[in-house]
Length: 201
Figure (tube, rainbow, N blue to C red):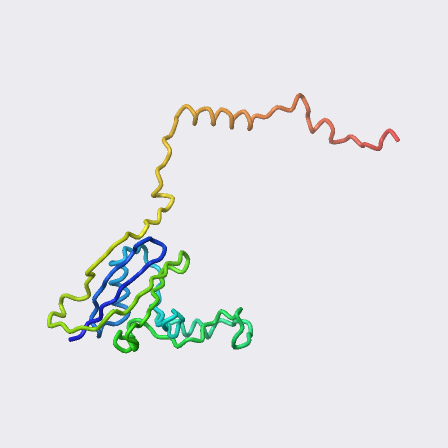
């Protein structure tokens, strides 16, 4: 049985690299799940692979879900074929669970982009290293080298909360009560409701 050796880079973290071995008959969904753990990603966000040429230009897209129907329902403005404002992808699209690695590795130095979380984009650069044989398929997929750590994304609940100062809370409550009580220097709106400002003219 054959397996592929890949090297994965993430340019947002200095010296971030992973060396991974994956069986050639692995589908991209399983590859995605393995990368998710191996790279140290968080959450349950949308992900996609792009098969690229040597200059990292996208040639094919492999998404976690089938987005073809969404693209058909979405009415985008009409643009010329080469218009830079066009956002609709014209690349061939595939679904991860139906796409097998060996069917997409066509270049001895195949380049693949792995994009995760489109709201907070993370792009990983995957370079095909070589193909080799194994008689122990149960050992795959595996990470044979790793360096660098993905930064942890903190949410509001993860941040340290300031200690509550009871004296400050009591003072705030007193100030709010004073504001609610109000002072009008003897002014009573009801005393002037019948006043006609033009009565003396």
